[in-house]
Length: 205
Image (cartoon, rainbow, N blue to C red; front, side, top):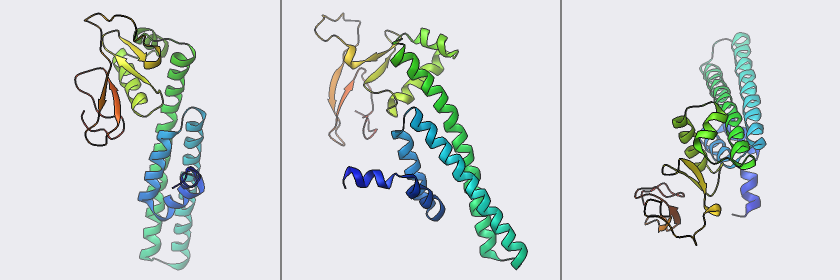
């Protein structure tokens, strides 16, 4: 499948139609698109999901009107409940993504634009506990919001592979970056600890 065909698959008309007529596919497309979106794109995703939830509420209301005018019908009742549940689910999910988007954009501004690497400094800028900051950054790295980096417990900072000077002699207390091939999918991973998961298939390395 070409990149153009893939982009069409994740277009919003396809996603909205999938949500209405085949919910499992719609959920999968939303989840995949959310992982690919960054910054302002993530905000756009939130808004479209919110508006789609409103559309589902309207469709549910339309089913109620049909029930009133035509009398009780099992199919109309099922449709009303179906769109109501989808609407509520999408609305709650969009609000959750909206909160995450605000937080993630602030992290990116601090780390990428502000070039701050110390977890303590990042925690101070974010006004969040350092344990929460570590979890947030690991989630962002796992979902590719921050690429080519890892959170170091040794230096208590976020480290970018592009900023590591491999030519310098390393102390025995410093972390060793190793290239490990995943036995499951064959992908090459840069790891810095004795235990890690594959970045591509999540299998233990």
